[in-house]
Length: 185
Image 1 (cartoon, rainbow, N blue to C red):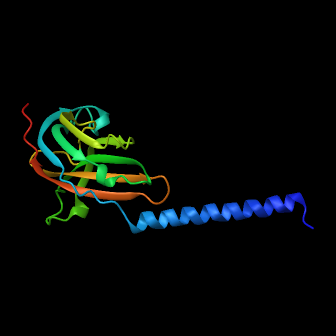
Image 2: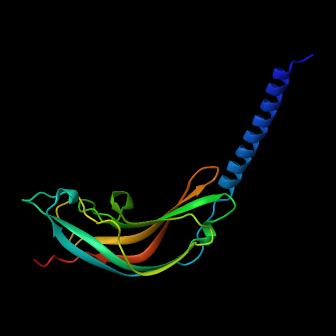
Image 3: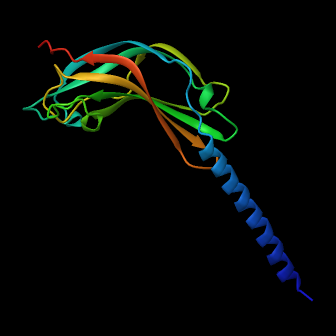
């Protein structure tokens, strides 16, 4: 005859095993069917505002100021294609991929990627985003002394955080390139 403690231990082992099997199946389903953003994202009129900054926050000193850029842009995006039954939230961000001075080819691995705006979408009923004149949350500055004359490409990155399973990452080229203007002193 088994004691009450042995019976409780057996029951909890069976329940724990069942829960782990369900968790593994959900993770496999999430990996096997990753969501893809199918709709068209409209991104336009990115206007750079380039200035000189003397603060240490932007990598400068009082003797050597750094070029700093902020942006204003319009964006329309529908993230409903990324949401399924296992989606907890979607983290979307716009970044600028700046060409590197020392690379002679168009290799994206050598490009600097700098995030200028981000947003977390956690309400499944509010995945449609339509705003005009969005100001960049973050300033763009680089370790190289100058930004003017360099080109940058805008891209949208997203990260899908599921309730259970691995994170899913994606990138969309926003088809807008910018050349940083000279600073008027």
